[in-house]
Image (cartoon, rainbow, N blue to C red; front, side, top):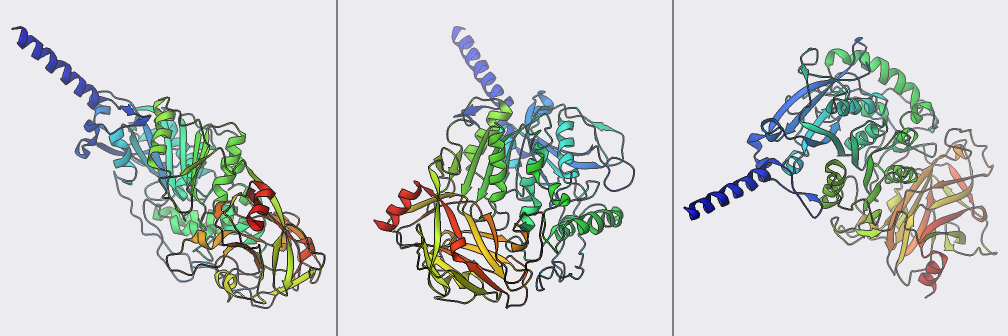
Length: 608
C-alpha cells in the first residue's frame, strides 16, 4: 500500500511539473526556451481583426482601420495564460507593384532640369485573411510569445493611404499597441461593430523587422506609446531625406537608381482599389510631388516630417539597432544617428554592426535576451556591458566582437592633407608639403564607374590620393569628414567621394571590405547648409564640409587608404552630360579619419 501511495505521489508530482512546463514559458541563461506545449502548430489560435486608428487618410470621413492578425498558443484560451507580443508591421505583406518601364525617374539629365512624368504601376492586391504573414511565428510562439502582424495604412486590407513616412505610419502601429492594452477598439470586420478584445496578452510589446519593416518599430516608438517596451530595428530607414538625398544632392539608394518617395508610394499602394484615386491625388500627386523637390535636393518641411530623429523626444522603448556597414541601400548612418540620439536620451541602447549589405539581424541569442528582459522582466543583464557589437571582417555574423561603444572610444580624428605628385594623383599625408601643387582638376564623365576609376593608374575623371603602404593593421571607427575647397565650370555639379583600400581586389570572391571603406556625396550648391542652395559662380571657389558614411573597419597591412574625389557616380547620382570640370584647391582640402589609437597609431602603421 505504501509503495502504491508513493508511486501515486511521484506520478502526480511529475504530471504537475509537466503540466506546469506546458502551461508557462521558461527561461535558461536569460533566454526564453522552447516550450513543447506551445510547439504544435495545429494548436495555435490564428485570427484577424481590424483596429481603429485616430486618423482618416482615405477621405471617407471615418477613422481608418488597420488589418491585424494574431497567432497565439491555445493555452492563452484554455488556461487563461497572458503572454507578451512580438509585433511586425509592413507595407509589403499584400504584394508590391510590378517592374514597369518608366516607373523610376530618368537620371540622365542636367542638374536642376525639369523631369518628365514617371509611369505609375498598380499593385495587384493579395489581401488574404486571417493570415497576413507567417514571419516571426515559428521563432517566437514556441518560446511563449504571441505574434501579431499588421498591414500598414493603404496596403492589403488596411484602410487609409500610404504616405511613406507620414504621421499615419507612426500612429497606425500605435493604435495596434493601444488595442493590445485595451485603449483602442478592434473589430471583427473592416466596417463592422462587433468588438474584439485582447484579453490574452500581458500588454507588453516588442517590435522588430527589416528595412521598411524595421522603420515601423522606430516610428511606433517615437509616439511614446505605453506598452511598447523594446524594439529591434534591422537596417531601418530612419530618414527619407537621408535615403533619397545626401548633403543637398539628389542621390538614389544603391541598386535603385532613379527611385524616390513617389516611386516607393506606387510600389506599396496595395490597398482598397476604390480608394486609390483619392489617395493618389491627395498624397502622391500633391503632398509628395510638391515636397520631394528633385530640382534642388534641399532639406525642407516635407523631409523634416519624415525624419524620425526629429520625433524622438517621447520615445521610451529599449533600442537594439542592427545594420550592415556595407549596406549601400539603407546606409548605416540611418541606425547610427538614432542610436546616438537614444544614447544621449539615456535610453537602454545597443548596436550590432556586421560587414555585409542590406539586412542581417543580430545573433538570435541577443535578440532573445533583449525581448526576454523587457517583455518578460527577466533580469538577464543584457542591458549591461558593451554597447556595441561589431562583426570583424573575417568573422561570421553570429560571432561579433564587443566594444564599449560605437564609435570606438579609443578612436581619434586624424587630419590628412592632399599632397599632389602628378596632375590627378598624390599622397595622403599627416603634414602638408610646401612644394605641393596647389590645385588639381577633374572632368565629369559618368561612363566611368567609381570601381573602374579606383583601379585606373591615372585618369582626368578623378583625383586619387593614397597613404603610404600600411606596415601593420589600422583600425578605423566612426565618421570620416571631408573638408573641401572647390570650383565648378558650371552652376551645378555632383560631388562624389569614395575612401578605398588599395590595391583593388578583383577576385570574384572578394569581400566589399577588401575595396570599399566608405563613401559620401554632396551638392556644392549646398555649401552653406543642406536646406539652402544657390547656383555656383563658375570659377569661384567654395568651401564645404560633410561626413562620409559611418564605418568600422580594420585595414590590413600591405594596403593603402585612398581618397578618391570625382563628380557623377553612376551607381547613385543624377547623370548629366560629361564635361563639367571641378577644380580642387588642395591646400584648402583635407580629410579627417577616425583612427583607433589616434595619430600615434597611424604614424606607427605607415612608418614602422
